[in-house]
Length: 343
Image (cartoon, one colour):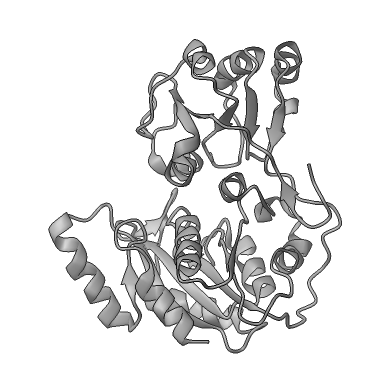
Protein backbone atom coordinates (compact mmCIF):
# COMPACT_ATOMS: atom_id res chain seq x y z
CA UNK A 1 0.00 0.00 0.00
CA UNK A 2 1.39 3.42 -0.98
CA UNK A 3 0.36 6.86 0.20
CA UNK A 4 1.48 10.19 -1.18
CA UNK A 5 4.50 10.47 1.10
CA UNK A 6 5.90 7.05 1.98
CA UNK A 7 6.04 3.47 0.87
CA UNK A 8 4.15 1.65 3.61
CA UNK A 9 4.14 -2.11 4.02
CA UNK A 10 2.56 -4.65 6.32
CA UNK A 11 4.56 -7.83 6.88
CA UNK A 12 2.86 -10.34 9.14
CA UNK A 13 5.14 -12.41 11.41
CA UNK A 14 6.42 -15.00 11.99
CA UNK A 15 8.98 -14.54 9.21
CA UNK A 16 10.99 -17.05 7.22
CA UNK A 17 14.21 -15.49 5.91
CA UNK A 18 15.13 -16.96 2.52
CA UNK A 19 18.78 -16.43 1.53
CA UNK A 20 19.03 -18.79 -1.43
CA UNK A 21 22.56 -19.89 -2.19
CA UNK A 22 24.43 -16.58 -1.84
CA UNK A 23 28.06 -16.99 -0.86
CA UNK A 24 28.90 -13.95 1.28
CA UNK A 25 27.35 -12.09 4.19
CA UNK A 26 27.22 -8.77 2.32
CA UNK A 27 24.86 -10.27 -0.27
CA UNK A 28 22.51 -11.36 2.53
CA UNK A 29 22.45 -8.03 4.35
CA UNK A 30 18.65 -7.87 4.24
CA UNK A 31 18.40 -11.20 6.04
CA UNK A 32 21.03 -10.23 8.59
CA UNK A 33 19.34 -6.88 9.21
CA UNK A 34 15.95 -8.40 9.92
CA UNK A 35 17.50 -11.19 12.02
CA UNK A 36 19.32 -8.53 14.08
CA UNK A 37 16.54 -5.99 14.59
CA UNK A 38 13.38 -8.16 14.44
CA UNK A 39 14.72 -11.47 15.65
CA UNK A 40 11.74 -12.27 17.86
CA UNK A 41 9.56 -12.13 14.74
CA UNK A 42 11.67 -14.72 12.85
CA UNK A 43 10.63 -18.38 12.76
CA UNK A 44 13.71 -19.51 10.85
CA UNK A 45 15.85 -19.36 7.75
CA UNK A 46 15.79 -21.22 4.44
CA UNK A 47 19.01 -21.90 2.55
CA UNK A 48 19.61 -23.70 -0.74
CA UNK A 49 22.54 -26.11 -1.26
CA UNK A 50 25.85 -24.27 -1.48
CA UNK A 51 24.72 -21.26 0.56
CA UNK A 52 27.66 -19.61 2.30
CA UNK A 53 25.83 -17.58 4.97
CA UNK A 54 24.13 -18.46 8.24
CA UNK A 55 21.66 -16.16 10.00
CA UNK A 56 21.79 -18.44 13.07
CA UNK A 57 18.09 -19.16 12.94
CA UNK A 58 16.34 -22.54 12.87
CA UNK A 59 16.66 -24.28 9.51
CA UNK A 60 13.25 -24.76 7.87
CA UNK A 61 11.99 -26.29 4.65
CA UNK A 62 8.54 -25.52 3.24
CA UNK A 63 6.71 -28.05 5.40
CA UNK A 64 8.66 -26.91 8.46
CA UNK A 65 7.80 -23.28 7.72
CA UNK A 66 4.11 -24.15 7.53
CA UNK A 67 4.33 -26.14 10.77
CA UNK A 68 6.04 -23.17 12.46
CA UNK A 69 3.10 -20.94 11.51
CA UNK A 70 5.13 -18.78 9.12
CA UNK A 71 3.07 -15.93 7.66
CA UNK A 72 5.66 -14.18 5.48
CA UNK A 73 8.75 -15.44 3.66
CA UNK A 74 11.18 -12.56 3.11
CA UNK A 75 13.77 -12.75 0.35
CA UNK A 76 16.71 -11.74 2.51
CA UNK A 77 19.28 -11.00 -0.16
CA UNK A 78 20.42 -7.93 -2.06
CA UNK A 79 22.32 -9.20 -5.13
CA UNK A 80 23.94 -6.75 -7.53
CA UNK A 81 21.32 -5.50 -9.96
CA UNK A 82 18.43 -6.53 -7.70
CA UNK A 83 17.42 -9.66 -9.64
CA UNK A 84 16.34 -13.13 -8.47
CA UNK A 85 18.21 -16.15 -9.95
CA UNK A 86 15.96 -18.43 -11.94
CA UNK A 87 16.81 -21.54 -9.94
CA UNK A 88 15.29 -19.96 -6.80
CA UNK A 89 11.82 -19.69 -8.35
CA UNK A 90 10.70 -23.27 -7.70
CA UNK A 91 11.29 -22.87 -3.95
CA UNK A 92 9.67 -19.44 -3.80
CA UNK A 93 6.66 -20.68 -5.76
CA UNK A 94 6.38 -23.61 -3.34
CA UNK A 95 6.22 -21.21 -0.41
CA UNK A 96 3.51 -19.16 -2.12
CA UNK A 97 1.48 -22.27 -2.96
CA UNK A 98 1.72 -23.25 0.71
CA UNK A 99 -0.13 -20.05 1.63
CA UNK A 100 2.91 -18.10 2.84
CA UNK A 101 3.14 -14.47 1.71
CA UNK A 102 6.30 -13.52 -0.20
CA UNK A 103 8.07 -10.20 0.39
CA UNK A 104 11.11 -8.88 -1.45
CA UNK A 105 12.96 -5.62 -1.83
CA UNK A 106 14.46 -6.19 -5.26
CA UNK A 107 14.27 -4.07 -8.39
CA UNK A 108 12.29 -6.82 -10.16
CA UNK A 109 8.62 -7.17 -9.16
CA UNK A 110 7.64 -10.54 -7.71
CA UNK A 111 4.50 -10.80 -9.85
CA UNK A 112 6.64 -10.46 -12.98
CA UNK A 113 8.71 -13.54 -12.15
CA UNK A 114 7.63 -16.75 -13.92
CA UNK A 115 5.10 -18.75 -11.95
CA UNK A 116 4.94 -16.66 -8.78
CA UNK A 117 1.63 -14.89 -9.47
CA UNK A 118 -0.06 -18.19 -10.30
CA UNK A 119 1.44 -19.86 -7.22
CA UNK A 120 0.23 -17.04 -4.98
CA UNK A 121 -3.25 -17.24 -6.47
CA UNK A 122 -3.33 -20.99 -5.90
CA UNK A 123 -2.18 -20.67 -2.28
CA UNK A 124 -4.13 -17.56 -1.37
CA UNK A 125 -0.88 -15.76 -0.52
CA UNK A 126 0.19 -12.18 -1.23
CA UNK A 127 3.23 -10.91 -3.14
CA UNK A 128 4.70 -7.83 -1.44
CA UNK A 129 7.26 -5.60 -3.17
CA UNK A 130 9.07 -3.30 -0.75
CA UNK A 131 11.13 -1.40 -3.32
CA UNK A 132 8.30 0.58 -4.90
CA UNK A 133 8.59 4.35 -4.39
CA UNK A 134 5.49 6.45 -3.76
CA UNK A 135 3.94 8.50 -6.54
CA UNK A 136 4.26 12.24 -6.89
CA UNK A 137 7.74 12.79 -5.43
CA UNK A 138 8.68 16.42 -6.15
CA UNK A 139 11.95 17.88 -7.34
CA UNK A 140 14.02 19.18 -4.42
CA UNK A 141 13.75 22.85 -3.51
CA UNK A 142 16.64 23.19 -1.07
CA UNK A 143 14.31 25.04 1.30
CA UNK A 144 15.57 24.99 4.88
CA UNK A 145 13.31 22.80 7.03
CA UNK A 146 12.73 22.95 10.76
CA UNK A 147 13.92 20.16 13.01
CA UNK A 148 17.29 18.39 13.24
CA UNK A 149 18.72 15.66 10.99
CA UNK A 150 21.56 13.18 11.16
CA UNK A 151 22.51 11.11 8.10
CA UNK A 152 24.69 8.00 8.04
CA UNK A 153 27.20 7.96 5.18
CA UNK A 154 29.70 5.30 4.22
CA UNK A 155 33.17 4.57 2.95
CA UNK A 156 31.52 1.85 0.83
CA UNK A 157 28.31 -0.15 0.47
CA UNK A 158 27.38 -2.68 3.17
CA UNK A 159 29.41 -1.07 5.96
CA UNK A 160 26.65 -0.58 8.54
CA UNK A 161 24.75 2.58 7.61
CA UNK A 162 21.39 1.02 8.46
CA UNK A 163 22.63 -0.62 11.68
CA UNK A 164 24.20 2.65 12.75
CA UNK A 165 21.05 4.68 12.05
CA UNK A 166 18.95 2.19 14.00
CA UNK A 167 21.46 2.30 16.85
CA UNK A 168 21.46 6.10 16.89
CA UNK A 169 17.67 6.15 16.95
CA UNK A 170 17.56 3.67 19.83
CA UNK A 171 20.12 5.60 21.85
CA UNK A 172 18.29 8.89 21.32
CA UNK A 173 14.97 7.30 22.30
CA UNK A 174 16.55 5.80 25.43
CA UNK A 175 17.67 9.29 26.43
CA UNK A 176 14.17 10.69 25.96
CA UNK A 177 15.14 12.66 22.86
CA UNK A 178 12.40 12.95 20.25
CA UNK A 179 13.63 11.07 17.18
CA UNK A 180 12.37 9.14 14.14
CA UNK A 181 14.21 6.52 12.09
CA UNK A 182 13.80 7.33 8.41
CA UNK A 183 14.28 4.25 6.22
CA UNK A 184 15.67 4.66 2.72
CA UNK A 185 16.29 1.04 1.72
CA UNK A 186 14.24 -2.12 1.46
CA UNK A 187 15.56 -3.68 4.68
CA UNK A 188 15.03 -0.53 6.69
CA UNK A 189 11.50 -0.26 5.32
CA UNK A 190 10.83 -3.89 6.29
CA UNK A 191 12.05 -3.15 9.82
CA UNK A 192 10.30 0.21 10.25
CA UNK A 193 7.20 -0.52 8.15
CA UNK A 194 7.57 2.68 6.12
CA UNK A 195 10.09 4.79 4.26
CA UNK A 196 11.15 5.56 0.70
CA UNK A 197 13.37 3.15 -1.30
CA UNK A 198 15.71 5.86 -2.51
CA UNK A 199 17.60 3.77 -5.07
CA UNK A 200 14.31 3.04 -6.88
CA UNK A 201 13.53 6.74 -7.32
CA UNK A 202 14.21 8.39 -10.71
CA UNK A 203 17.48 10.29 -10.34
CA UNK A 204 16.00 13.78 -10.81
CA UNK A 205 13.80 13.20 -7.76
CA UNK A 206 16.21 11.59 -5.28
CA UNK A 207 16.93 14.81 -3.38
CA UNK A 208 13.22 15.61 -3.43
CA UNK A 209 12.46 12.19 -1.95
CA UNK A 210 14.93 12.92 0.86
CA UNK A 211 13.12 16.20 1.54
CA UNK A 212 9.75 14.39 1.66
CA UNK A 213 11.20 11.69 3.91
CA UNK A 214 12.38 14.21 6.54
CA UNK A 215 9.79 17.01 6.57
CA UNK A 216 9.51 20.03 8.84
CA UNK A 217 9.42 19.03 12.49
CA UNK A 218 9.75 20.38 16.01
CA UNK A 219 13.04 22.25 16.50
CA UNK A 220 14.44 19.68 18.96
CA UNK A 221 13.31 16.61 17.00
CA UNK A 222 15.95 14.45 15.29
CA UNK A 223 15.32 12.57 12.06
CA UNK A 224 17.83 9.72 11.86
CA UNK A 225 18.20 9.08 8.14
CA UNK A 226 19.53 5.78 6.81
CA UNK A 227 22.25 6.38 4.23
CA UNK A 228 22.73 4.53 0.95
CA UNK A 229 25.76 3.75 -1.18
CA UNK A 230 28.91 5.82 -0.83
CA UNK A 231 29.97 9.11 -2.36
CA UNK A 232 33.26 7.53 -3.54
CA UNK A 233 31.56 4.42 -5.02
CA UNK A 234 31.78 4.27 -8.85
CA UNK A 235 28.38 2.55 -9.10
CA UNK A 236 26.24 4.10 -6.37
CA UNK A 237 27.51 7.63 -5.73
CA UNK A 238 24.41 9.17 -7.29
CA UNK A 239 21.99 8.02 -4.61
CA UNK A 240 24.45 9.09 -1.89
CA UNK A 241 24.75 12.57 -3.35
CA UNK A 242 20.98 13.00 -3.62
CA UNK A 243 20.59 12.02 0.04
CA UNK A 244 23.31 14.43 1.12
CA UNK A 245 21.59 17.34 -0.64
CA UNK A 246 17.97 16.49 0.16
CA UNK A 247 18.49 15.48 3.78
CA UNK A 248 20.11 18.82 4.66
CA UNK A 249 21.89 17.00 7.51
CA UNK A 250 23.00 18.90 10.57
CA UNK A 251 25.28 15.96 11.34
CA UNK A 252 26.92 13.06 9.53
CA UNK A 253 28.10 9.76 10.97
CA UNK A 254 30.61 7.97 8.76
CA UNK A 255 30.32 4.17 8.63
CA UNK A 256 33.24 1.89 7.82
CA UNK A 257 34.28 -1.77 7.85
CA UNK A 258 37.68 -2.25 9.46
CA UNK A 259 38.53 -5.01 6.97
CA UNK A 260 37.60 -3.05 3.86
CA UNK A 261 40.49 -1.71 1.79
CA UNK A 262 38.76 -1.52 -1.60
CA UNK A 263 35.24 -1.05 -2.93
CA UNK A 264 33.19 -4.20 -2.40
CA UNK A 265 32.78 -6.00 -5.71
CA UNK A 266 35.10 -3.52 -7.46
CA UNK A 267 38.44 -4.50 -5.98
CA UNK A 268 40.36 -2.33 -8.47
CA UNK A 269 39.12 0.76 -6.62
CA UNK A 270 40.96 1.30 -3.35
CA UNK A 271 39.25 3.19 -0.54
CA UNK A 272 40.35 6.75 0.02
CA UNK A 273 41.67 7.72 3.47
CA UNK A 274 38.82 8.12 5.97
CA UNK A 275 39.63 11.77 6.59
CA UNK A 276 39.37 12.48 2.87
CA UNK A 277 36.01 10.70 2.63
CA UNK A 278 34.68 12.80 5.52
CA UNK A 279 35.82 15.97 3.76
CA UNK A 280 34.08 14.94 0.52
CA UNK A 281 30.81 14.23 2.27
CA UNK A 282 30.89 17.44 4.28
CA UNK A 283 31.68 19.46 1.17
CA UNK A 284 28.54 18.17 -0.53
CA UNK A 285 26.34 18.28 2.58
CA UNK A 286 27.21 21.93 3.08
CA UNK A 287 25.66 22.85 -0.26
CA UNK A 288 22.23 22.67 1.41
CA UNK A 289 23.30 23.00 5.06
CA UNK A 290 26.45 25.07 5.56
CA UNK A 291 26.49 24.09 9.26
CA UNK A 292 26.78 20.33 8.60
CA UNK A 293 29.45 18.55 10.65
CA UNK A 294 30.66 15.00 11.18
CA UNK A 295 30.08 13.78 14.74
CA UNK A 296 31.59 10.30 14.74
CA UNK A 297 32.68 7.13 12.98
CA UNK A 298 30.78 3.85 13.26
CA UNK A 299 32.99 0.85 12.54
CA UNK A 300 32.24 -2.81 11.92
CA UNK A 301 35.15 -4.41 13.80
CA UNK A 302 34.02 -8.04 13.46
CA UNK A 303 37.09 -8.85 11.37
CA UNK A 304 39.55 -7.68 14.04
CA UNK A 305 40.99 -9.91 16.79
CA UNK A 306 39.08 -9.16 20.02
CA UNK A 307 42.25 -8.07 21.82
CA UNK A 308 43.14 -5.62 19.03
CA UNK A 309 39.75 -4.03 18.52
CA UNK A 310 39.88 -1.38 21.25
CA UNK A 311 43.35 -0.14 20.29
CA UNK A 312 42.34 0.01 16.62
CA UNK A 313 39.33 2.20 17.41
CA UNK A 314 41.34 4.41 19.75
CA UNK A 315 43.98 4.92 17.08
CA UNK A 316 41.37 5.91 14.51
CA UNK A 317 39.69 8.25 17.00
CA UNK A 318 42.98 10.01 17.80
CA UNK A 319 43.87 10.32 14.13
CA UNK A 320 40.53 11.75 13.04
CA UNK A 321 39.56 13.57 16.23
CA UNK A 322 36.10 12.04 16.48
CA UNK A 323 34.51 9.33 18.66
CA UNK A 324 34.68 5.88 17.06
CA UNK A 325 32.60 2.86 18.09
CA UNK A 326 31.25 -0.45 16.84
CA UNK A 327 27.44 -0.07 17.12
CA UNK A 328 26.82 -3.77 17.78
CA UNK A 329 29.56 -4.16 20.41
CA UNK A 330 30.06 -0.75 21.99
CA UNK A 331 26.79 0.95 21.18
CA UNK A 332 26.79 4.51 19.85
CA UNK A 333 26.64 6.52 23.08
CA UNK A 334 29.92 8.42 22.47
CA UNK A 335 28.69 9.44 19.02
CA UNK A 336 25.32 10.58 20.38
CA UNK A 337 27.16 12.56 23.07
CA UNK A 338 28.95 14.48 20.31
CA UNK A 339 25.76 14.74 18.25
CA UNK A 340 23.80 16.38 21.07
CA UNK A 341 26.75 18.55 22.07
CA UNK A 342 26.76 19.98 18.54
CA UNK A 343 23.22 21.35 18.78
